[in-house]
Amino acid sequence: MSSKKFRQRILAAGAVLTLALSAAGAAAEDLTILSLGGTYQENQSKYWFKPYAEATGVKVTEAAGYNFANLRVMIQSGNVEADLVDLSADSVNALSKDNLLEAIDWSAVPESCKAGIPEDMRHPYAFPTIQWAMVMAYNTKTYPQGPKSWADFWNVQAFPGKRGSIGATRPPVEQAAMALNSDPAKLYPFDIDKTFDKIAELGSNMVFSDGYAKVVQFLADGEVDMIVIPNGRMVPLVADGKPVAINWNQHLRFPNFFVIPKGAPHVESARKFLNWVCEPERLAALAKPTNYGPINTDAYKFIDKDVAPLLPGNPATAALGRVADTAWLGEHRQDIARGWARLGVR
Image (cartoon, rainbow, N blue to C red):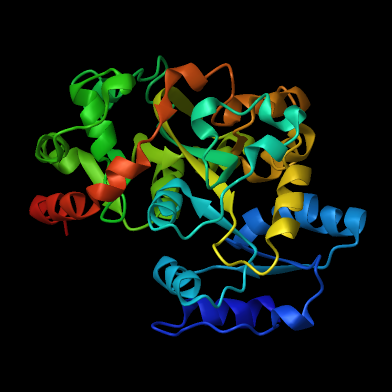
């Protein structure tokens, strides 16, 4: 099946997805991987999927892009097409809570892989791979000394200038919470109403955009001087020599995982792939081309010293931030949406 056709099935609203290749017609070692598309998956394919197929002789089929609700329907219906799916932590939490994922056999994972994986990332139903981070970035000409905290982001007297952030899809509630309480370890739970009151304090000093590309462009063009942004979005500006920098203090990391859907046609093949891709050197290969940091800290032994400082989870900056509590955020998604509506931004 082509990736395009598979993606169309996953995205078909309300459709019960059916197998294009029956289990009987597929080889025992076949493997179908559903990931997120774009340059991220292009690099997964280049450094992980194709090398695995070449090394093992396993036929690896890739598909890209999915709607979470219909992914859930696919698993619940029992008509599972994917053996592995690349998921964010909140999606992992939701599916594992409903018993829709196969367990990870951590006892079978090679010790060379497990040693560098933090205990809190050894999920019983998901295998950790990469992480991205929400950070502060700023114009170094406007602020030669640089803001040091989210409290500084909100301090328009000491740091005059426009701020930028994405709006409705991910308003900066956690950043506002850390402006109120500077200790990331005590971030959750926070008072959502108070964070939106804090956001409102910025008034016309905050410019909201409907996409991260526009937020970054505003910083590059000098229309704003400080932004809330995923770390990877800043790397092209840094590489181009723009007068910008990342402040890693109080950053939030968001992990991604591979999961095996309950009822996947090739569970053992999926587990073999995980036990192959988990080696630190293989995980490290994705760092430079994607700007995502490996969750396995041992992978940093294989990452160039000029690349590591730009990655979330880098041992030199990891202690300055924390992993986001995506379970709490998921539970309060509607509350955050209502708070944004009350803010009345047009």
